[in-house]
Image 1 (cartoon, rainbow, N blue to C red):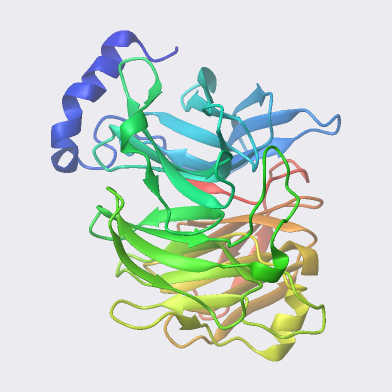
Image 2 (cartoon, rainbow, N blue to C red):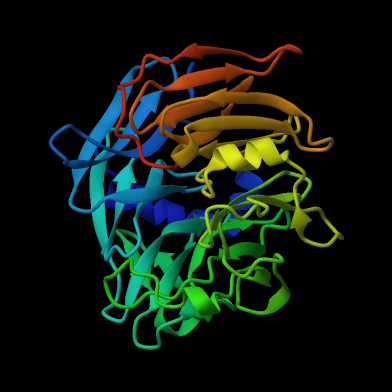
Length: 369
């Protein structure tokens, strides 16, 4: 059944005490198998917001008009926003119990979505990375309030991302500070065409949710677009880059910012860099096991490293590997062309097996409930 007005009203009443309630006091989708959320297409090109359990059971597959990218889960209600892929004008609020489409969230006329968003721990506020079409190159965070029946844009709470082309964002452990990967690439209107490759300005920004900048750091190569990231429970940030320079250049496609330290390349081998084909996609951190995983779909390669020592645990071919998510014992990985896999990291030697999930057409992100 869809969420009722009473249930959504109860969410509004609960926001002040959400931290005391705990993450899944009001709803838990885990059961006996983690719920995997992703965007996916079918063979005919129809776009879907999907939920599958790790054991292969389908929870829902909801048709949507635009292709989605990442998934933003509510902290304690059975809700998730499937965020439209850049330069989408629509995102979709889904009831995770049955896949009911509750709301098509449309961007305001002079904005488009960049594919990522986060809910605040209170459950009341959502922040989405957006492009200001009226002032090309100005990245912003749109601020939306979850009212009794829908997400509502709050115009006067929009804040700058302090960079160009904001992509993925995530909360730091304090729950009030955001880390944002500004890709540095200017686009205009509804186009994905890069307008400023000779003047790119990628940056990693930490700011509070009200827009006050705490830090802004860059990598040595200006054409190294900072896109995706993950945060460990101790505040360590890992980012993945997409390089827009010459194919023969060797640049750091993985970088790390440890608490209190400078942002710097994460040490991977030159051989591994070459296999990434200048492009990284999804990043996931398994905080319990201190591991970081990354997909490199253009290189058809999947990696797992030790977060602290940078030792390689997995370096394996995987056709068009797409989204990766931390699950009990290891990582689940989807594919745009092939089969999905589970990597079991509980023993010293990592083992993998195929998952009983549909083959192919998965998008580049995977969220785990």
